[in-house]
Amino acid sequence: MFTGIIEEIGRVVSAAPGSMVIAARQVLTGASLGSSMAVNGACLTVTGFNSTTFTIDVMPETLKRTNLGRLHPGDPVNLEGPLALGGQVGGHLVQGHVDATGQVVSITPEGEALLVRISAPSEVMRFTVAKGFIAVDGISLTIVDKESSSFRVSVVDYTRRNTTLGSRQAGDIVNLEVDIIAKYVAEFSQVKTAGVTEDFLQEHGFLVR
Image 1 (cartoon, rainbow, N blue to C red):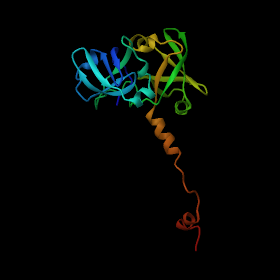
Image 2 (image 1 turned 90 degrees about the vertical axis):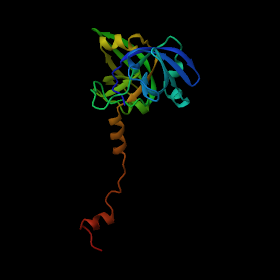
Image 3 (image 1 turned 90 degrees about the horizontal axis):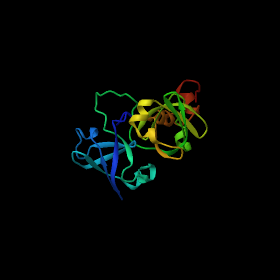
Image 4 (image 1 turned 60 degrees about the horizontal axis):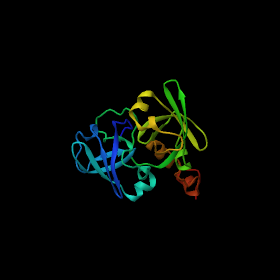
């Protein structure tokens, strides 16, 4: 589990089929074999590390659902280590299970912030709501507004300087993860009931057989 508050920007050292090496510093503190690491919002397992880099395995399903397959040596990535129980949640609860990718449509300056519009597939848009949460490349952001197939987020100066969103351009592909609470609400609302049946009426004293 993560918070969507990026700890640092790492750099891809190598990207081979099924494996990736990433240079980092801060997230390596306390790292261990088998621990989780969010890379551009995708929860991955650390399979090796030293004082300056760590290695992760990247499965075909992850490559299919995320933008990790587009990365090359030298590319920057957002990094966050796992949330410790009892720690602060500065963003929102992020699982690191990327739902789909979206595409940056436009970037508009607004004072010191940036308004970023991102197009997303229907399976993501159905869980979005104005002022709700969404994780973009692992960054916890608040949705400013939405249309039928896109939404806008406001990126403050700190986030722009300390995450990869500061270098994103129109056309770039980003990882998206919707709020887990929205998923559960949608699932529970789809529960079908039998409605008013003869057995229901009899059980509650409205019908005598």
